[in-house]
Length: 297
Image (tube, rainbow, N blue to C red; front, side):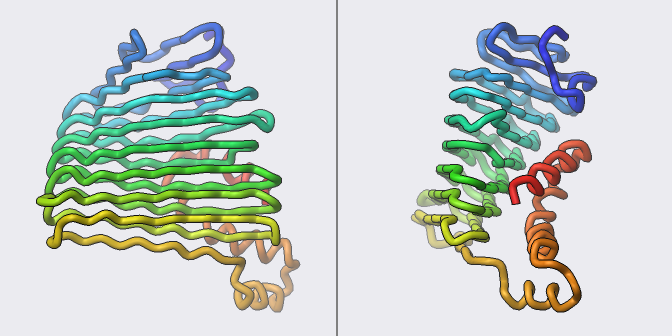
């Protein structure tokens, strides 16, 4: 490849690289006119280097099982806008990592449409330096479509993050779960707007939200607004937000066992975020994330 691709992905079979100068498709999948068609059982890597995407369309054919790794690296303002259509009886596991080489701004808009018995497992890693804006719309359009979101957001210095999540249950017997893991350090500000909608007649659906946050400094800030819009009785739905500082009892216990305050806090935070890291199931990416977190905290 002529494009500079990170070592940990460049040797994989299906890598598509996007940069200001070129688009390099080193995969078996067709990409043309801003459309990508995925099928079968495979892993695919999309790597963006200082690249803005407008109206990218990803179509996952029926009866597929795709692991999609979306990695965006930039040192300037970029905008990403794409749509993923997941057809019947398909599973997509999407891991997203947004990386800034210097303090800058990125705007991301994503839309997902799920078919019959399809599943979307969405893992978002937000350790972005600067300002990051993410808006996601997920439409559960047919019966027994499923959504599972895990998002880790660690802010440091004076980072600003705005996240808007919208989930629409447009069919019966649909399921969604959102779990946001948030950490604010120094003067970072994290703002979340989390929405779940079950329309009338879409019975036996289940919509769950859980937002947890730890503020590590006096100037840190986490704001979460969880919302449910339920127009049907025969459903399950719940939401919640638990935001606070490190548990003083846990900290005292670890200090009493001989750990320094920094060691104790790191241990508590590791226990808090490890469930998220284990969901990635990619050793190199897990190691990178752990290293990044240590630098931020």
